[in-house]
Amino acid sequence: MTSVGVRRSRRLGRGVIRRVVPLAAVATAGALLLSACGSGSGSSGGDSKSLTFWISTVPGQDAGWKKLVAQYKKDAGVDVKLVNIPYDGYTTKLKNAAQANSLPDVAAVPSLDPIWSGKLLDLKSIADNKTNKINANFLAKDSSGKVLAIPSDVTASGLFVNKTLFKKAGVALPASPDKTWTWTDFIKAANTVREKTGVKYSLTFDQSPSRLRAMVYEMGGKYVHADSSGKFSVDDATKKAVNYFVGLNDDKTMPKSVWTSGADPSAMFQSGDVVAYWSGVWQVASFAESIKKFEWASVPTPAQPVQASDVNAGGMMVGFNNNGEAATAATKFMSWLYEPDHYRVLCETSGFLPVESGLNPKYPFTSEAAQAAFKLYNEEIPLYAPISGYFNGAQTDWVLKGKSLTEDPTKTELGKAINGQQSADKALENIVAGYNQQVGGGS
Image (cartoon, rainbow, N blue to C red; front, side, top):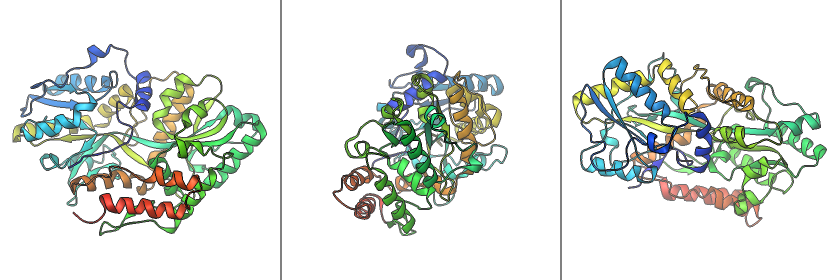
């Protein structure tokens, strides 16, 4: 069986490294790696005074975890042994630990796995605690309502603009998520800016199923969605949105090369020759450091008519039922972790976008644009429609049925449509067929 990741950009991925390095305390990689994958480095079966906690993150982003486990030892007298495992070996180590009955007590995992999902603690009491204000749209649950995982943080799609070009063209930007623009209005504005300033493109758009889903959701569609029997289909609003998207790739509004041949949309935007860029929150730290030649900004995502995004878990917090004493202690630790005052510290120190609302974390950015971007994302997420968490939840359902979407056909099939090799509707037919073949049907 294959495990399913909760996000495409893994913690050690290129975009994520750029996102987190400016946010965390400066330290050497050797000092921050608490453990490698050595045997016995994180054996399970703790007790009321000692727990093992596995993570996998880049040097620097574990700063928040380190700070919290140190504080928990002071507050509760419990020694939480933090083990930072290289990403490339992490899922295998978890599988091996499950088979050897030596799972950690707590873990921040990139994915759920049928091999060990039966040993997970129910985190419902933490998720349902109204004081925590955890966004229920992004929890991982089974069919009985058991909460298998709570995100350590979330990621969301979002819109960046070259603010300098908008100013030069005299075109206004929406001031807040409550008064955002539609996709039609945004594209009209971006085209006006392009024409008045003479730059090459109005928009670049990540070659990503996640980014496409966000746009479709905002235009009232469900994208590729399963019914109660597990059969996938697309609705009329999705067909309309995807046809609109394909039509935007005309080498004026959008360059065809991104979705047809893998050109780098971020580099295009950062060149200054593009009006706007549809990507996500992980770009913020990178842009705070790399964009010097123009003023940039995150702006409210379009709503036509739905306020939405495609929101994924940056990581998934789980607890394992190794023994009664350790299970109780693990639940207490995670309950403490998600108390708003503690969780805020984690988000601020590690540069996380919180799954809890109302925190108002203060990030250590010197860039005003970056500070404003994180403020905007924190304001927008509570406004997003529940559809925003559909795919994140769907992946959990697939895992529990022992299935995985090993190859999302979206990029290939829409690339063909943009190239004129097939219609957008035919591309959607092929995408639906791919989903049905890989993850369709019941258990």
